[in-house]
Amino acid sequence: MAENEKTQLLSMNPQELGEALRAMGQPAFRAKQLFSWLHQGVPFEQMSNLPRTLREQLRQTCEDNPVRVLETITSKLDGTVKLLYALPDGHVIEGVLMRYKYGNTLCLSTQVGCRMGCAFCASTLDGCARSLTPGEMLGQIICANGVLAAQAREGERSAVGNIVLMGSGEPFDNYDNVVKFLRILRMEGGLCIGMRSVSLSTCGLVPQMLRFADEELPVTLSLSLHAPNDEVRRQLMPVARSYAMDDVLAACRHYIEKTGRRVIFEYALVHGVNAAPEQAVELAARLRGMQCHVNLIPLNSVPERGLRGVSEREVEAFKQALERQHISVTRRREMGDDIEGACGQLRRRYLGQQTHADAHTEG
Ligand code: SAH
Image 1 (cartoon, rainbow, N blue to C red):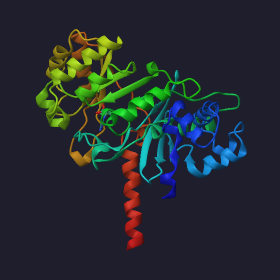
Image 2 (image 1 turned 180 degrees about the vertical axis):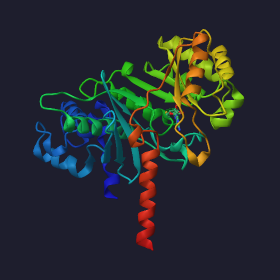
Image 3 (image 1 turned 90 degrees about the vertical axis):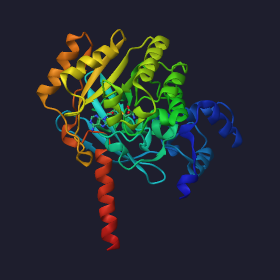
Image 4 (image 1 turned 120 degrees about the vertical axis):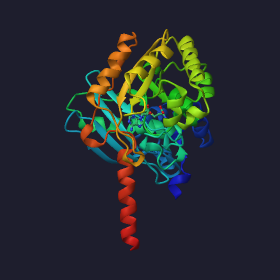
């Protein structure tokens, strides 16, 4: 429990770190040193340019990285790494590290679980336990950098270069922490990852989308659309009852105008629900004239919800129907198929085992 009460330094920007250090009687220049060490994932003991007494004081009262790797599973097919992390209060989250030719992409969680209730999504099955702090988001990247460094060959430099906020949680349901995370993420002396290397995926919380367009954080916005109209969207996504598709698309247009960046529409194909070629034509009509791209995701079946994915032929037919309407479209590459790459699956298996083990000790 004492762990919980420790100050979470990784959630602080350099100015806040400076104030925390001043309260400990330290000079201002130490903030920059500490900030840099923290983001390199160096434990307090090894922060060699800090006085020994300060290092000890920090170790006792503060947390360097609130996130700890519990388990990693590496795909034999493509080197994708599935990570299971523990948080200071015992919650468990997961992430995926994807190795592409052009660099390493990490999929981050923004909440423990999710409360958006999308019918096809495993992350939301148990609701949302809590939102993550900025430090817990940064901490996932620092952990992944540690995994990469351990796997790197002699002399090879390897770190996370791209971030996708597509793990569990709805980033805009944790707005302030996500915005603070992004501001710290791009800072020099820290992880220094620019907004062009970040994709943020949202189920379409319109007020936050409009507000975010003014933050001057020009990330790639991914919008989980999954339907050609409100009726189908409401079947899959409870959030569609709060915001009409027209308003969601208007918010996307606003984002495109403000940032000059195209929006990506995520579309998971669900058998018998949203995957008919006529629905592709309807979708194209809604998106006409927008600077956008459609990313087709073959559904990872969620047996708990009775939803089925589509065949390869259906994906291709839907894709071609969009292409005929001159909509830019790709099919999402599946990675880590052998290691439960999809959102929420590994965590659910882990929690399932825990409950099982608990039942055994009790019995
Ligand atoms: N809450 C955000 C972030 C989640 S991102 C959002 O809704 O966008 C994860 C992406 O994977 C979203 O597009 C989500 O709709 C999609 N997804 C979730 N479960 C899926 C499944 N079983 N099969 C395919 N895509 C899924």
